[in-house]
Structure formats: structure tokens, C-alpha cells
Image 1: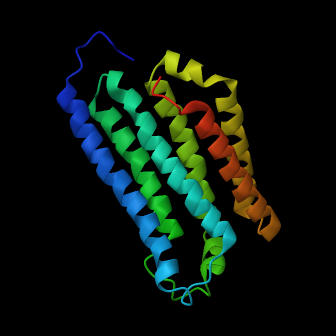
Image 2: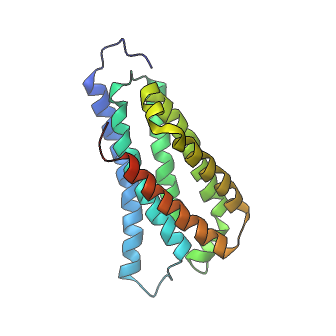
Length: 196
């Protein structure tokens, strides 16, 4: 990270605006999808695994946006801007995977999610890989402050997501979703009390 250049606050403001739009679309997609369950309870049966991953993604997206605050000290370049925009866009793509435009060719969310799980977990792995780049961009101090738990978390999510891509067992899928959500809540509470 090059900290010798003066940071132009208008660049960060522009970047944050664009990323905010992408993040807002992601959250909007999830909330709109959840609202459909209330609006039309008989139209689509709730699938617990799907529901847990929706909550997980909401937490992930909110956490992503909160910690992008640390990009305030970064010397911005166009490739870096593209990287962060692509990273944010993956969240939107995952949200559209959780709530597709139509479900006509599927029996319900269970059938849909299980048929698209390779896509979902593949993208989840990609977001964790991009998170490493995002973390390094924020500097050594930021990376060191996350501690070894960051790397354990990364290895666990990536390895179990790879297994979830091929395993269709419902108990495994539900257990992974719940453990992932509980783990993410714990991780969030342990780190996100302040901006420091």
C-alpha cells in the first residue's frame, strides 16, 4: 500500500457511492425475496437451508460494507476500484442465486437451491478468496489485527463449501448452513464493535 500520496477524499466518496449502489441492490434483493414469503406464504414453501443462507448473506453484505471503511487510507487506482466493484458485485450475483427471477422449472426452493448449490458454494469460495485480497489492500496492520482466526475461518469456509458443492445430504447442508451462520455471528461480534 502506498501511503506517500495525498488521498483525494472525492475519489473515496465516488468509490463508496458506486459500491453502496451495488450493496444496496444486494440487500434489496434479499429483503424483497423474504417479503415474498410473507406476501404469498402458500406460493413458495420455505426451505430451512435456503433461509439460513439468506440470513448469512445479509450478515456478510452488511459486514463487507462496514469494513470497506478501512479503504479510506488506500491510494486508489482504477484496477483497485475494479477489484472492489467486482467483489461487491459477487454479493449481488449470489443474492440473485438465492432469489431467482422465476421458479417455474423448479418444485420449490429446496429443488432450486440443491440444483444450483455448486454455483452458490463456488461463488462463496470466490468471495472468501477475494476477501484475502481485500484484506491485504487494507494494509499489514489491518491484516495482523485479524489474527490467526481469520485464516482458520477462511480454511474452514472454503473446505466445507467445496464439500457442500458435491454433497446433497440434507442434514449436512442444514448443519453447514447453521454452523456457518453461528460462526459468522461470532466472528462479527468479536471484531466489529468499533472501526479500529
